[in-house]
Amino acid sequence: MKRFLLLCISLFFTTAVLAAEKTPEPINENAFLIQKEIAIWPTDQTYNSKVSVYNCQAVRLAPDWLLTSAHCVYSACGTRPCTVEITLAESLDLLVRVRVKHSTTSPSVYIYNGFFPGQNRISGVDAALIHFEPQKAEFAFVDLQTGNPISKSEFDAKLRFDTEAKAQMDAYGARLLSVAGVSTVQLKPKIVVPKTTAGVVSYLPSRSPEVYYVDELRHFVSPSFGVRQGNSGGGVFTRSGDLVGIVSSLLYAKDGSVSFYDAEGKTVMTFKNAQDFFMFTGFNGSTLNFIRNKVPGLCTVGVVPDFATPSKKKFDAIVKAEQEASMQF
Image (cartoon, rainbow, N blue to C red):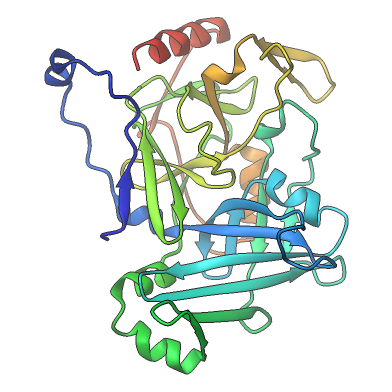
C-alpha cells in the first residue's frame, strides 16, 4: 500500500553504528491496515467541538469485532449510552465511517471486567471490545473529491476502482501472541507501533531487542518509544504483522514515578522515571480469555519458543537493561 509513513526513532545514529547493524527484518506494512481510527462520545450529547470526544485507535480482529483499550471507552461508555464512530476506510477519493450505538439494554462495547481507571496497573487489564453489526450500524459514505455524501450503491461502484479504500475495508484479523501461562520472557522479534490518521498509516519501529513480558506486572516493557504518539488502543505488532499487544496508558505521580500493585493492593514495583519506558497490555490468560469469549475464530499462538525466550532475569535487572537500551537511542 502507498499511504505509509515511517517515523524515525532517532536522527543521531552514527555512520559506524548503521554500518555495523544487521539488515533488519522487513516490515509487513499491509498488516497495519487492520488498525482503525475511532471516536467515542456519550450518545446524549451532540457531537461537536464542545463535547468530550475520545479519539483513539482500534484493531479490527474480525469483520464485526474491534479491540481497543478500556480507558478509551470507559468514560463515555462505562456507565451510560455512548456512540463509537469507526473510520473503516479513507483514501484520497472515498471515506466510509460507521457509528455503533451502545447501551446497557443493547450493548456493543464490552470493557474488561477487572478494569477500573485510576489504577497504575491498568495497562495489565486495559482491554475492551467493540461489536460492530452492519445491519444495526449507521454508515456514512463520502466522495472526498466533491466532499458530498453518497449512497451505498454509489460508494460500492466507486470502491471497485479504489484499491486503497478496498484494501482498508477488507482488512481484518491478526494472529495474537499469547503469554498465557508463561513466566517472564524476552520477546525475540522487534516491535512496531503503527497509528492510522486520515487513512495514512505511520509507524514507529523499535530497534531495541530489550522487550520483556514481566509476569509480576502482567505487562510488556520496552525502552521508551511510541509512548507519546497518542495512539491508545492501537496495536503493538511484530515486524511480520503478529499482534503482541495493545497500546495502553499509565498514571504518573508528580515526581514522574509510577507504582504497580497486585490484586490485594500490595506494591509490586515502583518506576522512578516511568516516562522512560513503554508498557503495554499483552495477551495473558485473563485478557486473552476475555477476547476469546467474544470473538469467534480468534487466531492465537503461544510466544514460547518461537517468539520469546524464557528469562530468569529479576525485575531490577530488566529495568537496568531497559535503561541502558534507552540510552543508545
